[in-house]
Image 1 (tube, rainbow, N blue to C red):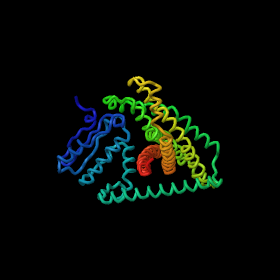
Image 2 (tube, rainbow, N blue to C red; image 1 turned 45 degrees about the vertical axis):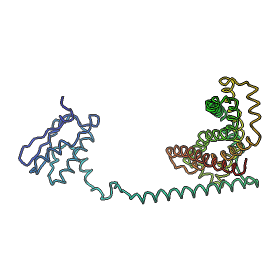
Image 3 (cartoon, one colour; image 1 turned 30 degrees about the horizontal axis):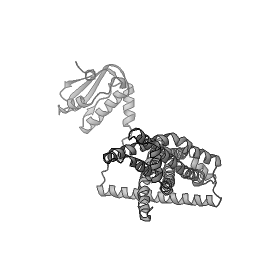
Image 4 (cartoon, rainbow, N blue to C red; image 1 turned 30 degrees about the vertical axis):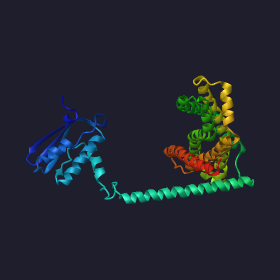
Length: 379
């Protein structure tokens, strides 16, 4: 079956040096653009062609696709020094072609692809990284100044906003923290049970789950959850305010965005994180207890006594200190990316994604540093 697009054009040679293009049918975008390959081939196979003309009597209707096709022919024939007779084209096509070719294209109008050397690309990446580090240090310094203003009673922010942020960071985060913490406790108990059952030491699953949740996993999982939930929310909120120019309006009114927007979010998250961490510890220990009682044939009272004998207040204190640090870092990451957001909806999405990644990196790095410090101090 022949292609309908190819049937719209026919080539003939009324003279040895003339090519006649007979155009037929509908030339519209709805019917598809006509490829220039066949026309280019018809011109190139006859090297002695000096003139090209059109026959458009069989065209039913046309739109800009016909104009595009004619412009390509003109460009190709101009490069091969072939004269194009446009007198037989429709009047509308002639006017549009004349309008398109009346002003020559600037030499630098087309985008030029510049291939940079690999060393130049590395240098740019290094400069961008250092610039990002400088902005981060400056943001942390401004946040510290806002905190000092709070201690001296000079910080200005709305108490109602602060209470609302506390609710968002605390009570509204309980469902997801409950689910993840309970499942983490289950997983720790499963992993420990597989090995400890080989030695008949199932009772020490309580030690493993209790210490793991209190010292490490409770604060770690809560921080990661809040980084993906609250940190991204902070970045999206501040990014949207940046797009709507609300932050610029605050600066114009003499209000410090650091005090009015960043400070209450940092305070709320740093206050709620220890409470969420304790809650996560309890749920994780409960998850381990479910595995110990149902799968390892441990008694409920026995499991509780073993957990109580293993854990001390210092173990919970270690996790609480980590949770406070994680809360501050998550708030800084979310607010920093939100304040750095561009002025578009896509930039807000990028800021939220970057806030999550930055929060997780901060949490892992700070947890490593705190673990080394605890080891040195013998805690």
